[in-house]
Length: 93
Image 1 (cartoon, rainbow, N blue to C red):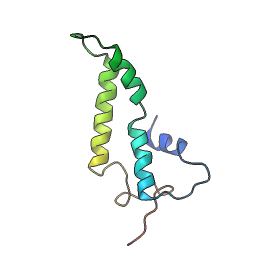
Image 2 (image 1 turned 90 degrees about the vertical axis):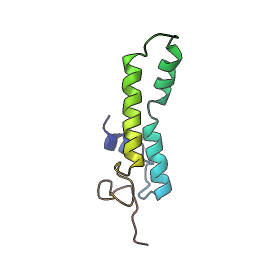
Image 3 (image 1 turned 180 degrees about the vertical axis):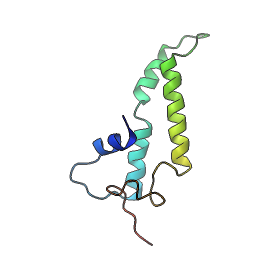
Image 4 (image 1 turned 60 degrees about the vertical axis):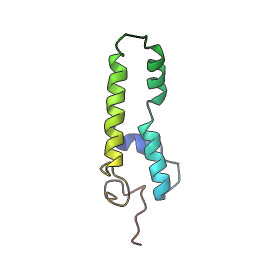
């Protein structure tokens, strides 16, 4: 599911503005959206056996998205507010 669609589907109904802290918490939820599946696949890995390709894919995707978030290219406030104008509240200090 594309990032914007996931974020849209996980917004609180009726809430029009999100603080920076709330926006970051929402992004953290997005980054961990496959955690349950990843944990399940990890628990099935046997010693000295290769990891399932799905687990490798999910780990790579998670790491890439987390790095994007940490580097500020994920769309977080205040740098990229035009990307998500409906949820991020950006005010000049």
